[in-house]
Length: 395
Image (cartoon, rainbow, N blue to C red):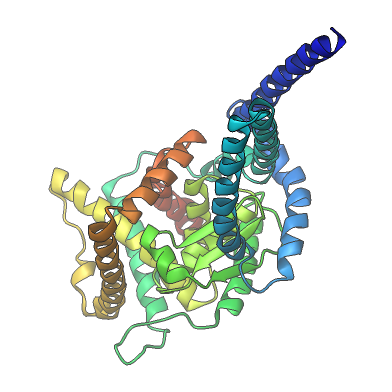
């Protein structure tokens, strides 16, 4: 009878442990949805820098991507482990002890998942609830007019053309980054920090070493050009094609994640505007390029509805170098599309589409607007110009 009672007691304890661990994991996974904005701001400005520096210091010792190498090692290891686990389970089912084996497996899985959820929240999740960067920038409040858009568009056009004129070209007439990956990554740290200091944006001042990914070409199949590993605090960059029109923004964007902002909109806002303020023409070019094409499309849309006329910057001879850069970018991604289509035809898997769905789901689960959250509202750029550029020029 004592053995039976002990067995029942052990079973009850196992059930309680399973329930407790499951509840704790679920609570840890969704808790960032319920924390107040004030706490998130305090956490991001005070606690996050002190926690993340431990991970970032560790990553400093490696010039290669720790994330990439772990994935390469862990994927086959996990696949092998799953096969071994299943074989053992079958043996247990044919003999005895299957229930205890399943309990221990689930318990261990929940412990790992709980630890992962806690790291995710401390390194990224809580930062989703921070005050929007647009509020930190303290834009002037006014109803934007077509003239406001045209003024900001002219500012972006002149900045883009000026920066492009200072860039060297290859034999195809295409501009590329001025310096090496390491120098650009180091420069981007200082650029983001100085922009944040100038406009009182509470970013972490920790130095973050960005890493190139050696399998970038295959990573391009997902259309992802940069990623912040919130479990290791590591910034990873796709270096298969370091297109000058997007690479500087991607680099600064991922550094913003590592420095305490989770929102894709916030990180893109900081990245683009910081690039515009850069002393390096390749970074300035990317920032103004992004703003110009966003505002040009919006200005044309407004003009179609109101009968106004948009200045035809896109048809000027000064735009020819810009179009060469655009063409080079299009050619690269067309090649990637062809390779993705070939894989889809052979295996029935659309890697790009699957990646988009996974990323969209992840963002929505954290309160974002899915892939749409990568887009910065055009009005942000106009208001930044009116608040921090036009007013300074008029002063």
